[in-house]
Amino acid sequence: MNEGLNKVILMGNLGADPELRYTGNGTPVLQLRMATNESFVDKNKEPKERTEWHNIVFWGQRAEALAKVLTKGDGVLIEGGLRTSSYEKDGIRRYRTEVIARDLRFTGRRALAQPPPGLEDDGEATQPGTGVPTTARLGKNGARGRPPEGPALDELPY
Image (tube, rainbow, N blue to C red):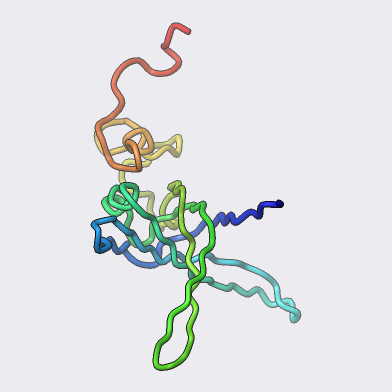
């Protein structure tokens, strides 16, 4: 039997702060609203921009960890799969399509007029006063942690 492929990759910005909830049995569920923008030229050769909104869902421990670090406006890349469910409201059958996310990567915040604090000349973001790249301070599941200890990778003997 031929298996299908249900894979979605989206890159955009969070349109609202994430909402962390728990199911009846205590499983964490994180819901995100994400906007993706598309620029194009219409038939009259006028530049246009279209924004699409996406519902993103994370489940389990990853949901709790991401709820601590994600905020409105964060730039992210999401990988997951589509799932459509239906429900009835006021006698009308309605459908909802969500991205059940498996992975998230930070792409940075939207472009700002001024560079954010901790952005060094080489363009690598650092935590203020530490000189440690922000990405290095993110631990397992995106949770913030202490800077890595021990020798740098280029100092290892192998």
